[in-house]
Length: 356
Length: 167
Image 1: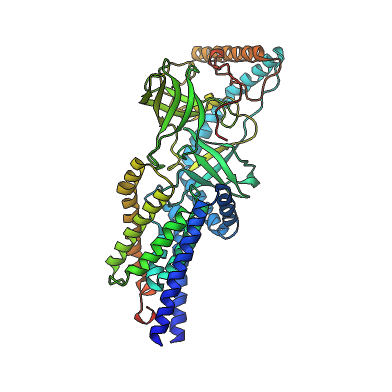
Image 2 (image 1 turned 90 degrees about the vertical axis):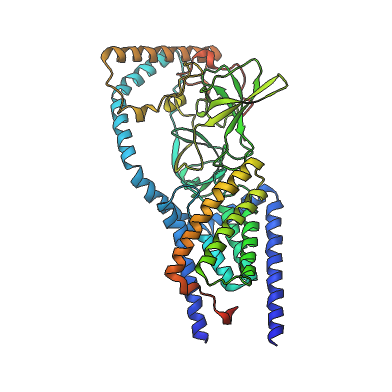
């Protein structure tokens, strides 16, 4: 009798194991869209309490650790905003003189990253902002350092971002001076914490020095122009004398990012300025630290320097306005930011590049 | 006898609830990065050791499905990995003295490493990334998980003890 029960239990265990294995293999082989649907259903039902608990924990941790940084950034921004109102007024006057439409403002949604324990965490990130917060699919995800990726799936209160470490990630990119354009994608090393980026499809005649900053080109309409993607650290390979592939050190690391910004809606204003990328610099020049963070440490500007800065900003605004004017009577929604010189705008349409 | 079994089940349920709380609330507050201990894996291995291969496989499948939903780089990879880990953990208890704390720590180390191996292979990682992950990242996470599991077993060992009448 005992032997019979034992045999039945053994058979039951084998059937359970075989059933679970079969279901796992089916989940692995079924179309990605089905997996996405099942995952979203689980996140919003059975796993919702656990996601909520993790959101609470992430908020608690980051609110403590970021308090001092936020306070110093707020002080810096308060200092900057004193001089900004005059520039905004002046810009509005110049734009009205040139018959340009009002530039749309930035839209972003802050979100905490809810890291998981799987080794593939970093290819996709679970974010604690969702449809209820205004997040949409394909919204770009950035950190103060640069590009992280784009939103792939959106639930009511959470969303999944595909990062640059994902094998399917691609972004149309350009060097900071706008002279070398190509496609950036992850190397095939697999592990999200070790993956670096490749700057591909560079014609053999174009060269980039080590340290050159590469930014999103804005082509394709997913990633706004000017978001830093990475820094050139050498040539990865050369193919048959017609293409050179550069290795990039990523600007932002998804596997350690704790807090991100989801850019949403209108094309954000002055993206390169927000990341302090200097398009007028040589390619070998590294990006300066973000202005808002660097301001407290910076030496006080004398009046002559302030005047020079204002003159430069005026010149940039006029140059960008002239470029936009030359392109057409009304300014397009994804026009180049004013900090970009006219020469930095590649003469191609909004048809290529970005990952969909 | 029946009340003792009910008490054991209650203890196990409370312990698993505690592990879930540690995973989703304490771990994000205290640890950053990939090397944080995986408390769900601790729960899975201890449950599999206590309950048998079938329940271990089923629990592994459910845990894996949840992992896939929360980190959907390749849906199904974690379900496959955790199913195998749950089943194998329960099977190997026949060959070791599974009530020993150090043996449990060894089980946990092996389980995390095996889970990472299967997840990375099933999600199509490149050779270089696979080697780096299996030789550096996975052992470090496995080590922290084994240490955390050892601490929990020292504190709540009686709750997870394998009883011969239940084997």
